[in-house]
Image: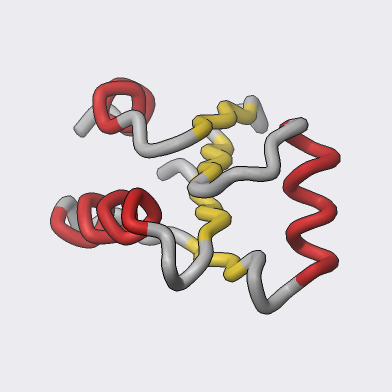
Length: 82
Protein backbone atom coordinates (compact mmCIF):
# COMPACT_ATOMS: atom_id res chain seq x y z
CA UNK A 1 0.00 0.00 0.00
CA UNK A 2 1.16 3.50 -0.76
CA UNK A 3 2.28 5.82 2.04
CA UNK A 4 0.40 9.13 1.89
CA UNK A 5 1.29 12.41 3.57
CA UNK A 6 -1.16 15.30 3.39
CA UNK A 7 0.08 18.80 4.15
CA UNK A 8 -2.88 20.96 5.16
CA UNK A 9 -4.23 23.72 7.38
CA UNK A 10 -7.36 23.64 9.56
CA UNK A 11 -9.07 26.46 7.64
CA UNK A 12 -8.52 25.08 4.12
CA UNK A 13 -11.72 23.87 2.48
CA UNK A 14 -9.94 21.82 -0.18
CA UNK A 15 -7.85 20.19 2.55
CA UNK A 16 -11.03 19.11 4.31
CA UNK A 17 -12.46 17.76 1.05
CA UNK A 18 -9.26 15.79 0.41
CA UNK A 19 -9.15 14.29 3.92
CA UNK A 20 -12.87 13.45 3.82
CA UNK A 21 -12.39 11.74 0.45
CA UNK A 22 -9.45 9.65 1.70
CA UNK A 23 -11.38 8.72 4.86
CA UNK A 24 -14.44 7.73 2.81
CA UNK A 25 -12.23 5.37 0.78
CA UNK A 26 -10.67 4.05 4.01
CA UNK A 27 -7.21 5.20 2.92
CA UNK A 28 -4.73 5.72 5.74
CA UNK A 29 -2.69 8.91 5.58
CA UNK A 30 -0.49 11.09 7.74
CA UNK A 31 -1.71 14.65 8.14
CA UNK A 32 0.71 17.49 8.76
CA UNK A 33 -0.74 20.85 9.82
CA UNK A 34 1.64 23.35 8.26
CA UNK A 35 -0.05 26.22 10.13
CA UNK A 36 1.15 24.71 13.41
CA UNK A 37 4.44 23.22 12.21
CA UNK A 38 6.63 25.81 10.50
CA UNK A 39 9.47 23.33 9.98
CA UNK A 40 7.10 21.01 8.10
CA UNK A 41 5.83 23.98 6.06
CA UNK A 42 9.41 24.81 5.08
CA UNK A 43 10.06 21.18 4.12
CA UNK A 44 6.88 21.14 1.99
CA UNK A 45 7.93 24.29 0.12
CA UNK A 46 11.46 22.97 -0.43
CA UNK A 47 10.12 19.66 -1.76
CA UNK A 48 7.35 21.03 -3.98
CA UNK A 49 8.00 24.71 -4.59
CA UNK A 50 4.41 25.31 -3.43
CA UNK A 51 3.22 27.40 -0.52
CA UNK A 52 -0.46 26.56 -0.93
CA UNK A 53 -2.26 23.57 0.50
CA UNK A 54 -3.32 20.85 0.23
CA UNK A 55 -0.22 19.08 -0.97
CA UNK A 56 -0.23 15.29 -1.03
CA UNK A 57 2.88 13.20 -1.34
CA UNK A 58 2.18 9.62 -2.29
CA UNK A 59 5.07 7.20 -1.92
CA UNK A 60 4.38 4.25 -4.19
CA UNK A 61 5.90 0.79 -4.03
CA UNK A 62 9.52 0.93 -5.12
CA UNK A 63 10.01 4.31 -3.44
CA UNK A 64 8.70 6.47 -6.30
CA UNK A 65 7.05 9.66 -5.04
CA UNK A 66 4.16 11.48 -6.67
CA UNK A 67 3.35 15.01 -5.56
CA UNK A 68 -0.22 16.25 -5.98
CA UNK A 69 -0.93 19.95 -5.60
CA UNK A 70 -4.49 20.73 -4.57
CA UNK A 71 -7.34 18.23 -4.41
CA UNK A 72 -6.95 16.25 -7.65
CA UNK A 73 -9.40 13.44 -6.98
CA UNK A 74 -8.94 11.81 -10.40
CA UNK A 75 -5.15 11.63 -9.98
CA UNK A 76 -5.48 10.19 -6.47
CA UNK A 77 -7.89 7.52 -7.70
CA UNK A 78 -5.49 6.66 -10.51
CA UNK A 79 -2.39 6.46 -8.32
CA UNK A 80 -4.05 4.51 -5.52
CA UNK A 81 -6.06 2.33 -7.94
CA UNK A 82 -9.29 3.09 -6.06
